[in-house]
Image 1 (cartoon, rainbow, N blue to C red):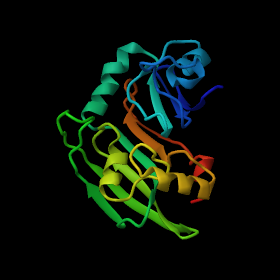
Image 2: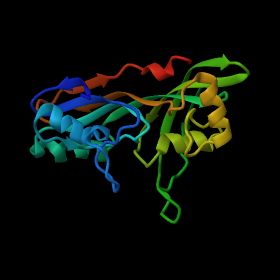
Image 3: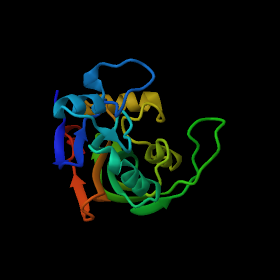
Length: 214
């Protein structure tokens, strides 16, 4: 399977990562077709360098660099919070029209809490059967582990399809209701400064078909 390319030049490539695919190899062995970095490497016939990540169940805009000399420049943009990221998410229940979550987060139990900030806007609400859902745009300022998912869980509105943090029975019931078990989180847009040419690059990915019920 080839990845859909959203932007490509001699220094970088932006792809639309499907839900269920890893960005780079993990601890456990995985088939090449389940790892975006290896799939893209074989697709382009050259080495690629990841500079950020998306969770395995999250789909959407994913940036790779093609020249190692510009890797540090782009990573610095991420470190200095200069890269703008927006996500689409569907959550259980009714949310405020807009708000900023600033709960400090820890990667795992026993690790220190770190500052985290996500800005949310409710785009619309919808009802399916007796269930109410909110469709959101999320703009994380920081890049903590599972930041959007944890901030929404802390607010009492877990993301639909979040079997890791949400209540399992509820998620299973909703998955059956919409005939779709996957996480409703999609990296919709990425904005950054081109590391060589210096102009702004804005890349957008359309919503996947799994968002159709909402």
